[in-house]
Length: 337
DNA sequence: CAGCCGTGGCA
DNA sequence: TTGCCAAGGCT
Picture 1 (cartoon, rainbow, N blue to C red):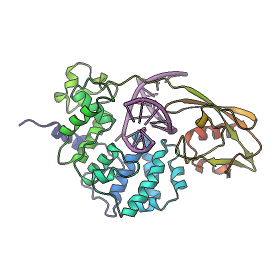
Picture 2: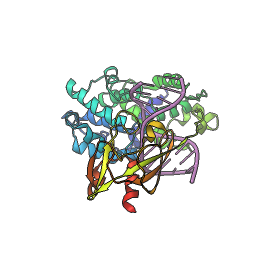
Picture 3: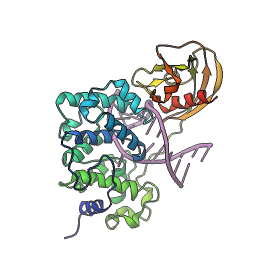
């Protein structure tokens, strides 16, 4: 009887699993206060499109400040947004609060994939991951790592995103009934450290003997992706208003770019695509910042009077304002002059 | 379905 | 320096 892909992968995982703050250690007793699903959920949301290294300090800060989902549910949204500042994709933080409150209302996390999927911020991936990792339910967990591993393992030549369905079907076939959570995390570890996007380490791969992509001679070319569009450059202006060792900060409205985050006043670059309005001021310098689908060059101008609704924020405490990175750069520029 | 939505590290 | 990319979700 030959070993299956999942057997090989789980054996490899037992020997080589990464030790991460949100994972249960082998032989470790899970917390009895109900915080285990909370920690799994929180880590999975933070890890959406975000590296492990970036998440670690945020996960530590969040779990110390809000040890349970009930504690997070009771927090003002503004505090959570500020704590999330710098991690990016701020709709995650807005949905985090909504989700925590819904879960607190329910009396705890639902223990199955279907109901998890209905919570704000939990899509197909995260619902499956939480079901498998937190509740040991068999769920087919497909993220970018799994897509890459599976596309190579089965030599899927169809380009993404069209290949998604075929890849999920393959993933379904190799997902075991037992230890589905460990299997999912093993696929992530494999994709992160062995079956990497560039320069995969096939000689170290426990699945090398089963890999059809390796037989093609160049597994690194898989999965095939559509070419990316070039990012446009947008121009805008940000306003620095300083008075009595304080600076004027606003809170961005809505669910669009940096929505809900504390910020410096600006000319509406994010809404209109180019800067036009606002008072004339003394130029302090320029800030470049890259977003997902455009680059931004912001002219930073000092003006005398506050703009819009906002608050005076002491310059000494600017690091605690929860400014997203774009505006943290602006503040750094203004304070360094 | 394709566009929108951050950030930092790396080659 | 520039482009690519990393545990996606929402509309």
